[in-house]
Image (cartoon, rainbow, N blue to C red; front, side):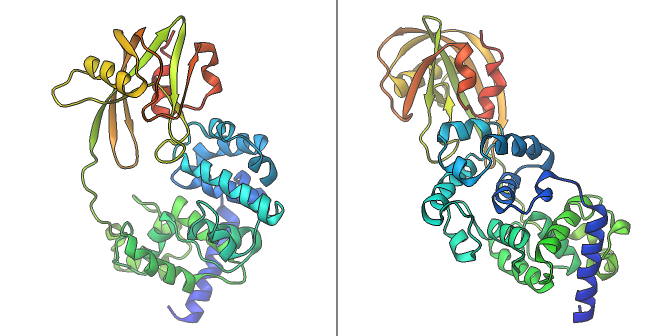
Length: 355
């Protein structure tokens, strides 16, 4: 595109956005903290899912200081159900740095933001452009899809090395007079019009500039690398009862589901029954001898890179003292106390069946 065509494209996108954008709570503020919270939550999570979490989270943690001074378990509880819990842990860590090193004032510097836990190029670009009107182009899934069709970019959008190509194109298209508005327009176009399937090309404000549309190739973009088959793991979990209390354990603070509470268990071995695996895993993980009283549920759950089928059993304590091998903490709780602890979504799929 010529400079004139690029300038017209920018104007059309911004004009379209002003008319058609969704009214979302984080678009009603220029507070960088609130914009940051929304952008972190929106990573890997759909808008309609995020809205109630965003509103609840800000009631509990209205500013950087409140977030930094809060207990991580309370933060994880507010985040419970959103998934990708490293996001919440990193936000807590970033808030502490902002409070300690920047007197609680949200940084407006690229270099400073990129040093904070969990803040990569996308979030730094989004916050700096939207909250501070700085000229940083955002590149997320929606943006890559729009650009791949607009310019007929053949590089796969899910190939890590392709990021530099899309970033360069996005930088060239960015409206440096209104970077925040333009970034949101490009993302909104991908969300509402330039969808993965059945894009509304007739409703697109820049369809006349779109190479894929002009060539009749929209359905061929974006290009993607086929992912390998998602592995499936068979898991067993035991709800151990002792004197009307249940045993829960807390995962290590780092890694998958870090810091959350769960019921003890693990992978089912080859040629091992779920019941025997449950007894073995509980012995290995918490040093207790138990018997299986009954089957509570079968739970299916998908994570980013794998899926699980979880067999959940009701177990009765027989003997032993808790000694942890893997978890970092434990509690014997009543069912009435369970809402005080943050659990993974897979556990919530059977917690309502407990009595």
